[in-house]
Amino acid sequence: MNQTPFLSNKKKDNDWRLFLKLIPYLQKNSKILIIGLILLFPLAIAGAVQPIIIGQAVSLLKEEPTWSFLQGKTIAQGINVLVVFLLVTVSIKLMFSSAQGYLVQKLGQEITASVREDLFTHLTSLASRFFDRTPVGKLVTRVTNDVEALGDVFATGAIGVVSDIMSIAALIFFMYLEDWRLASILILMLLPVTGLIIYFQSQYRLANYRAREELSKLNSMLQENVTGINIVQLFRREKYNSEMHRSVNERYRTAVDKTIFHDSAVSATLEWISLVAIAGMLWIGGVFVLQTTITFGKLSAFILFSQRLFNPLRQFADKFTMFQSGLTAIERITELMSEPIEIKDTGDSSSLQEKIAAKDHIGEIRFENVWFGYKSDEYVLKNLDFTIKPGEKIALVGPTGAGKSSIIRLLCRLYEPSKGRILVDGIDIRDISQAELRRYIGVILQESFLFAGDVQRNITLGDNYDLLEVKQSARMTNIDGFIEDLPNGYHTELRERGTNLSGGQKQLLAFARVAIRNPHVLVLDEATASLDVKTEALIQEALDHLLRDRTAIIIAHRLSTIRDVDRIFVLKRGELIESGNHDQLLEEDGLYASLYNLQMLEA
Image 1 (tube, rainbow, N blue to C red):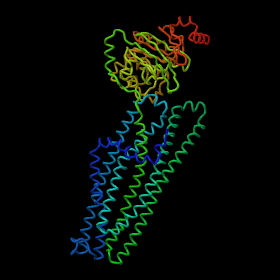
Image 2: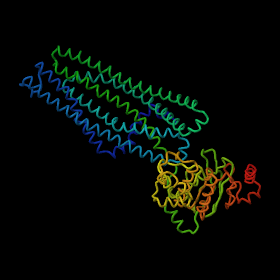
Image 3: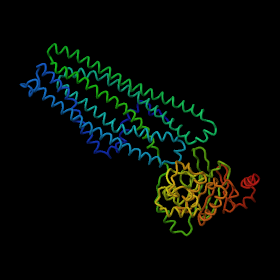
Image 4: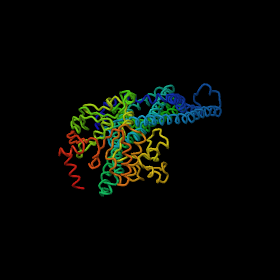
């Protein structure tokens, strides 16, 4: 991934554009946002008048000039009135800050949930090509950590920054009402502080992006090792992999240390400046008191003002750190959301159904001069041009890497052809909706993936099939006995990836998945390779039933299992070099005959 755009200073010009891309999520929760912003006004005013109230109390005790309505009252009466005012402001801050805090947290959670949902939906719509080049751990980091940071930006970060700005504005307004000279001195002290904060936060932004990249690598390594734990242990890679993990973990720790340094530098700078401001107020204010140009009450108020002014500034700096972290998250999320969806539905899904309804025989597949490569300059399929007739049984054979599985991926539209086109019953598959195409074609892979959940849900996969239909599909494929022998039958809970089933049992469920959907074309990619002889015999009987009157494409490495197919396509380096039935290809004495004789010799 090219990091340069994110690390350049020019990126700051684009921060607001990044933020504006996510404004729709705020619009969905506009009521919560508006109420939260309205509550900021009484909170800012209540906080700003408290130093003035305390200053008035000091003036009463020193018998200095006070507000007009306090004049003529005794010290005790005046203090009581001011205490009531102070309690009112404290009550406002307590009530409104609690309500406002709840609303902004709710806003953050609503936005986080919406962004995560949209991100997951977009992620599952991306083509297989994207997942070929992107580690799973990086995607997990973006969907979890980055989305959480984004929620903080919208809630505590963005609203908090507005709150702090309003608090500072209210304090400045009331300070100038009290004394413009002392107010101006405090404002002048803010200028160098602002410059330092901007510098340290820009450095924090760079460090935070690097830290998140290292965290992505850490998550990727964890996911890879957990998924491949059997290989790790069988080949004694524990020590080697632990050393690799330690190295990545050390880089992550170093990157996080840099973010901590820049964050701490802001806090330390503000602490030092706030002490200087208080000392400055005491010194300059003391001179003014001696000159009798201000009262002790005003001096007391400005000492509190200097403390109050730097509190929201300190909070602003803390939230600005969060804001920078969130902007990093927005960059990464926007980058993922901007990933183009290569395979889109453009046609009318009803067109295939209408075509099927008008024909007696369906299931024709035609490849017209199809070229394909996972990389633009390396073709794995070259100029494939063939037609599979309705109901015909075709086998694809050839050495490893010949392109057999790539043909299946193109047919199911997991990838798009680089050149040429693929037609199903005379319709370009790009003019068929993906959902319609994948109902039309049933695929049984060599290794079946199972989700956490019960057996029934792993057969229906979210479609609206009832238990009776599930049982019928299991009986049709001769696997009902295996399912009923499970502890809870069709309601047996399966662990992640079906680890409480054997490889053969997991494969059996794949046959029921396809049978229940009754596809017009059946694709078998070495589907019985993990089954024992007895189970394979049962499945073969079920396959004979499933394949009846259906077009079938079979990928097989054991050539003895495909003698009875109508035609065999022999592939070599992505090209179709031979075609015919078993006997014809043996007579040609070409690549198929060599492969077949070699297997017979080994047997």
